[in-house]
Structure formats: structure tokens, C-alpha cells
Amino acid sequence: MTDTTPGAAPHPQPAGAPTTPDGADVDLDTRAQLQQLSAEIHKGVVGQDAAVTSLVVALLCRGHVLLEGVPGVAKTLLVRSLAAALDVRMRRVQFTPDMMPGDITGSLIYDNATSDLVFREGPVFTNLLLADEINRTPPKTQSALLEAMEERQVTVDGASRPLPDPFLVIATQNPIEFDGTYTLPEAQLDRFLLKAVMPLPEREVEVDVLRRHADGFDTTDLAAMGLRAVVDIPSLHRAQQDVGAVVAEDPVVQYIVDVCRATRRSPSLALGVSPRGAIALLRTSRAWAYLSGRDFITPDDVKTMAPSTLSHRVRLTTEAELEGTQVEAVLAATLASVPVPR
Image (tube, rainbow, N blue to C red; front, side, top):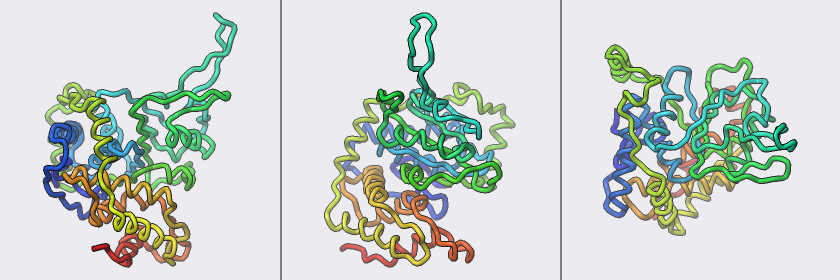
């Protein structure tokens, strides 16, 4: 598998992952910390390089990630390892059909001592929120996360309460099990910056996993793995500011717009990319350029980030689904159809 340090980060999609060139136009100290962040995560997680890189990009963009994979591919361990490497608070919520919105955001409860209603914070008040199997809860409860994800605050009984910084939602869903699940609304899917697919590992990686367990590896004991915090919050904020300063020349901005508008004209798509999706592609392209060691975006950055940034924002037509068309193939054809600026 390809090394997943940000200096040579793989494509956020699992297949055909390219590497990026080293550069010298970034803060070397901050970049070194980000490289170490990926290395620390891999003390707990073997392989899954693309998902690790997606989480790093999301952190730099202050975005959220939708993790998709069958049970047993280390989705939960990945998030726990990220939290340990950042030394931030993490909470896990197991979504179930009977969960209510207040179970996520918090609610007002009666305090006998004061004879008054007081607010009890829900699990959303954390730095990393693992929304496990988010599609197992009804849309009403899924939508409880919309304000938190978009505005980074929670409003209960007319009072708005800010969430901690950083705040990152990492939601998981099983792509093959549909009994007792609810499709995520498009409005909520659009709030996820990236979708990362966690595939079953290749044979060599799976052998490595079993070797670790044969040597006494315990997925519940992060300390025994040697995981330590390697990126502090001030460093992360500096990196986020650097990403925001990456230059986007007008021809590249127009290219992003043309790519997104082309998805709206595709005969295979019933739903194309919204302007929010175009903004997301700009943000992730900036992060990719930063991790590549540059302070400007190229069309190749846009092409690299388009699949993981846009795939969950489009919807196939019924005819395309019946024909077995894949979203990734449609996006690839769309990218090929848009002239690249010179």
C-alpha cells in the first residue's frame, strides 16, 4: 500500500491512489506535524490510507466526513486513533431507530435543587463526534445534526449554544445492509465535505492485521499501541489558516464551476452538484494543494479531489441505476468532458 503521510498523500478514493510531489512552499514545522499525524493513526489502523488522508483534508477544511464500509474494516478504530493523535475529546453515538433529536443535541431538564429548567448537553458537544451507523435512525433525528454541522452551534428552546473548536462529525454507514435503515436526506449529505470509502483490505494488509493480533494487539488499548498526541490545536488552526490562503486563480475557479455545472447536465444524473458542492471542491482542492507543498491550486488538484468531494452530492437517474452505472464513472466522464484551463 502507498505511504499515507500528507507529503505523499494518496487519493482520498481507495482505487488508483496517486502520490503528490514534495514541495517547499508550506510551513515545514506544521507540515511535519501533519505527516506525523498520519503516521500516528497508522499505529492503530493498518492500511486504509485513503480514509486517513480524507480525515486530514477534512480537518484542514473544517469539514465533516461520511465513512462508508462493511462492518469490521476499522471505521471506529480509525476515529479513535485520530482523536488520540490530536488529543481532543471524542464521543461515539450508536444511532438506533428509537433515538430522538434531543439525544444528540441535548435537552432541558428539571433541576430539583433550583426548581428550574437547565440545559443538559448532548454528545454533540465534543471535538470529534462519531455518528455510528447514522442511517439507522429516522430522518428527524438525522436532521438534528444539520445546524451543528453547518453553523457549529445548537439551538434549544430559542437559545443558541456554540460547539467546541475544532468540531468534526464523522458518520459511518454500511453500504450493503438496508434492513431497518433510512436513506440520508440530500440536504444532510450535502453537509459532508467528503465521502471516504473503506474497502476490504488487500491480502498483504489483512495478513499484517492478523500478525498484530497474534502478537497481542488490543484495539481497545490505544496507549499500548504507542499512540500519542502529535498535533496540538494551535498548530491545527495555523494549518487551517494556511489552507485558506492558498491562491485560487480565476481560470481554476471557473474550471470548478464548469465541472459542477456539467454534472447538472449529465443525462445519467437526476441530481447534480449544488453551489455548496462547488465551494466544497474549492476547499478540498486548496487543502490538497497545501499538502502537496504548494500555495496555489492547479486543475489536477481539482481532478484529484472531485470524486470524494462530489460523489455523495449527485444522484443517478432510475434508468442509470437499472443499467448498473456507477457514480464514479459518471463523474470521470464529466471531468473528461470539461476543458482544462491552460
